[in-house]
Image (cartoon, rainbow, N blue to C red; front, top):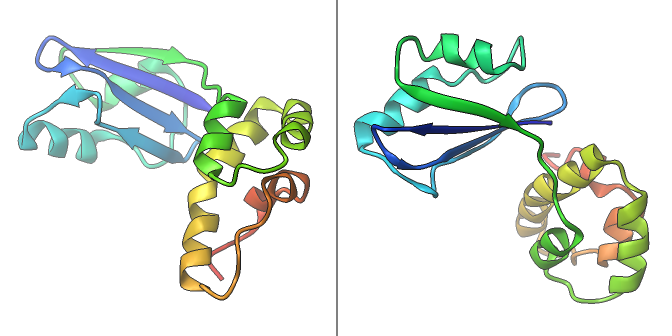
Length: 147
């Protein structure tokens, strides 16, 4: 996972960008900045969907001569972030034991791919959400929930 933070003197706040293990764009967060519609469209058009090189220098070439400061930062998801987002407050101790055994990449995937699982449950409303420890133990984030 690669996380980049973009700041500039032309807007307030920061833009967070997250690329997955396969270097595909996973997350593009504009919530912590104040951008005009024109600036939003600029970023949408310039950000590559797939990064051939996961470097700050490559991203800076994508934006040309714009006055952006781009830094790379590791991305970690805490157990509490995941547990709160999962929003089924059972078996916390069991979940924590499973969580610490996961690699950082698996922790990030378990967090971000939770949305795909939840969307699957909305479409298939006869299914109930798995217990949180079952989600971790059975690596639900590895499933293709689009089918």
